Amino acid sequence: MMQHRRHVSPRESGAALTVVLGLLTLLALWGVTTVTSNSSESRAVENDRQIAQHYTTHAQAFYAAEAGSEEARARLRTYAGQHRIIDNAPDDPTWGVAIGITGEVQEPASHLQHYERLASLQTDLPYTVTIRHATRAADAAVLRWGDERGAGAYSRNATHGANIYVITAYSAVGEARHTIEIEAAPEPPPTVPAALYVAGPLHMHGEHTQIIGLDSCGEQHQAGVRTTLPSSDMTLPGEATIAGVPPVAYNSTTLHVQSMVDTLKERATVVYVPAAASSGEHWGTPTFGTTLQTPSTCPEGHIVHYDTHGTRGRLQPGTTGCGVLLVEGDIEINGDFSWYGAILVTGSLHLTGGGIKRVTGGIVVAGAALLDAGAETSLVYCSEAIARQTRSMPLRILTWRDALPTTH
Image (cartoon, rainbow, N blue to C red; front, side, top):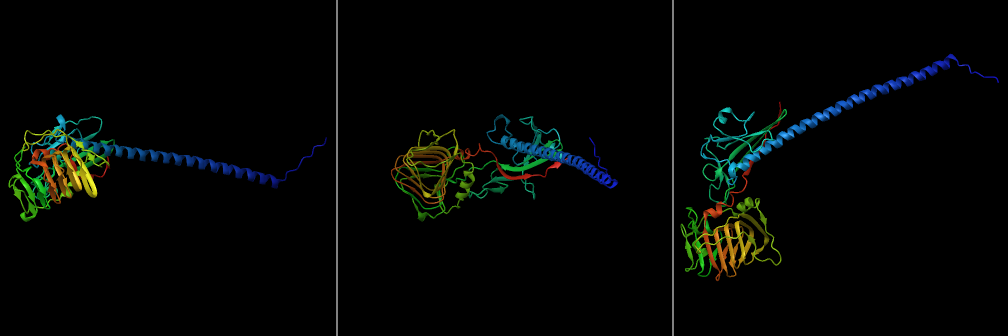
């Protein structure tokens, strides 16, 4: 068999070489690109890791500082138990406490040497905390949070209310540093300047009514009845018993009742929505005194918020409670009723339906009040019944500042 061989010309051989070299060049370029790409991806992964680590450490430092401020706030509460921080110098602008001070803090050393040093309640989170009194820049007067004008509006002042505390929490996690500073103060009790305060007209009927403004559990004696109106707008039966300092105070300061309700309803433990056929509610049961003039007692405390949504609200016979009753709108209270603490009503109040009605504490009504005949009513002012309801609350945060995080 004859074999046929094809002759390859130099031109064709050169072309094949060119093709091969081209392919090799492409493969080389692909290899370089792959190596470069892998290197870039590695750098990107490393950058992402560093960013994630940076974020994580700063987040840990932030939340640790938050935890430190919360420990301080919790230990300043009245009912904080054996770990409570007691402010034994409320008028001293240099008073201070340091919690868990072992390393760096954002506080001058000259301050710290006067501070009481306490151990933290935990050891897992890396924070330190300082607590001091807020002071006025002009004269270093210690600042308080309370009702300076006795009108139901809370503000910073130097004379009324509880101390405002500056709480600075500092945390360090790795190279991340974080500082949080808050101002906080105990929640003031509602302003109740009488056994019965009424901004609108007051009408009482019947002889079985006793309104006592003399403090039955302290020395903060108040008026029996206090109103913003002149005596011409009051109907007081001669047979009713009204006592206080004075028994009846006319033309008094108008209270910001809605403002007090707005402040306290944020802390409501009960939001009352009456059922279609509701019976008397029970938010605690006061223990009556031996006489109508003797104050009741009650160990419980609730903040009950009842928004009537523009209608006349009703509490059915047999309702009892301890704490603060906040009513937005008009309210009608029927039959037997007992309460230990303060009652704030932004509308009108109607006590009706007979039965026995006993309130130890005080009632504040922004509208008119009507006390019907047939009801045996005893309103006894008690400063302790009013004040104790806010003592167990966490301190109110007035300001919150997140200092810019840093990295060492």
